[in-house]
Image 1: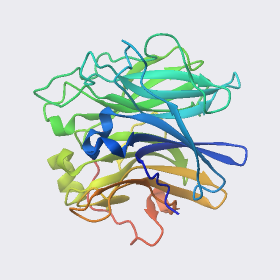
Image 2 (image 1 turned 120 degrees about the horizontal axis):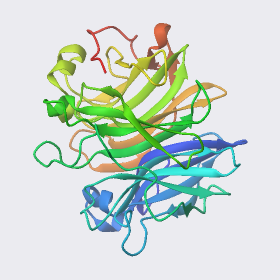
Image 3 (image 1 turned 180 degrees about the horizontal axis):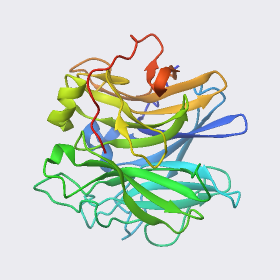
Length: 333
């Protein structure tokens, strides 16, 4: 059964498992605001649990923008949760401020002992933008992209990696300036900004997620049809909106765009901001339902998990889809 709430829209999500229980975190906004496009500015984070990623128990709002003037008093957007070496749970999230009209994104940090009650770490962001990442330039892009932190243990050594959505200002074509940023930390508290691990193909690569499958590393991302570069149109075909992925032999890159067709996409926004989770039965994809039909109303609910098959060379496809076929070279990073 799809996870939906009668009085709230749900969209971007992330998941973590504690024992036999899945914890899901979902961006939420009240349907009482009327216009679903205004959900982004009326956002908080919802928490639910499930034994199987299908039947969900809502636990209510667990995190929201700060009260009073603060760097994150405007919005609290997409992030990820990991368990640290200290035994505590760590939430990394996207924050913006009302003073900056929610245009400049930064990355925040909060901790919890029970996965529901979260306490902010310090009074400022855990990570802020710096060169070579693009600052806010309204002539090039609608916001300062520095969001969607995905945190994981560094599989090649001690410490932690964070990948995030960003852009590069030194790329002339704004639709090729989308980047997957990188930061590193020894302890989840002190972060060092690193150069991007991938740039190109699209104006933005949202909601990145890095995981290993079939002996290769996968970086999931989502993007919209208006943000495709001409290079990606030539390589992957007709621009679509949805979820695709990069491939690499190392989580730090270099990465290349996987050949088409896209993993989960449609000419209109159907399902978006998908995550892949590893279960005993294999990989499963979950995303939020945007529109069930072209021109229809915004749905704002979470899809049931869909099996993901791992093919030769680390290529992915949804169960039941046609075999993945090369459609031209992927853009480099």
